[in-house]
Image 1 (cartoon, rainbow, N blue to C red):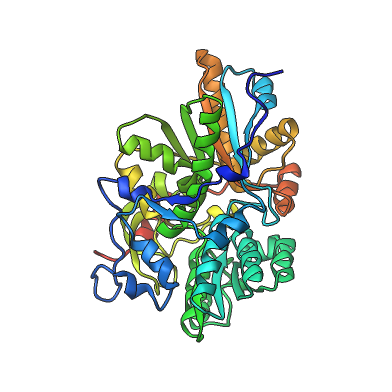
Image 2 (cartoon, rainbow, N blue to C red; image 1 turned 90 degrees about the horizontal axis):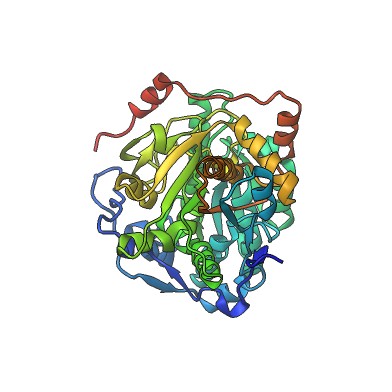
Length: 454
């Protein structure tokens, strides 16, 4: 029997009782959100018409290191948390690497991903505020699924604007949302003013997360008793997702292992930010050093090819301005299978950490991603989501480097969800008809040229 078990479990009593706010330890704080009309920094109360009040306060909180998790949220967490940290012995053997590979598996719930960690928190604060319902966007569908589960639990209405290409590629994900009571609309739609404008500007578009965000925000602000909630990018979401990293760190400590390298896929930043939070916190405080790698799709490479500037968070330009690595809010990614990673920008927290040198970034092509996904599935027995498979690809690459050097590094990556609703993508890969679209420098430059001059 191996000294370290295949699955390292925490007890129910070891679920974190507070979220960790990494901003409290950042010497250079993320730049403030700006009012797009005046260019002035926003205050929490300025966000109240869009977000729940408590979530608006969390969004702006740069000072409190720990924020207590409400009891009702903790009770819900206990239905599927703590999630296991798995030693990938079979993958290590298949690769012939001396590296030790661990993955934090967040797919053991009906939503199939880590998104439920923030969905239940946001639904709780909406219910506590006495709202009728919430609106949101979803890319691949994991966030919409998680939110529909959370709103069903608290008896709230849920309206989801789903990126059109995913709406068409993943009809069963859509049906799970509807089963939990959500209304699902392909975006851009003709139901909102901004949707009609985007359809006119980009005829026949397959949509983007930026489009869907614009529609969801309009829907929230034009209905009494509704607020908008978001599954990634925002500070509040990375705060809620810190449970992933806190559990990961506790599990590693339990078996006496220190991570050398931490790898996560990066679209808007929710799962990566959650996974790395306690580790980067130690780096910020000068207590430890880790190599952190953000992995993004080559089709939507905001960190590796974008600019660190103020930009709109949405294509319709109705949201505040955020300073982030961005490809430009008008950037329309190819209709490929990067799923929830098809967002033009990156979390302001992760953008600042990247700018300050606390993490690296790389981009990978989708055919390489699916090759890694199938290799992983065949030896580890889990069919991974396309998003998570970006992290798998780079974890395998790093483990093979260890094979060349003989280093026995401890590699940790986030396996944020399962791919059972992504079988159209797997089919295209298996049929040999999947291609790799990579935007040209001119494509990105044209989009970035339209960023606001702040």
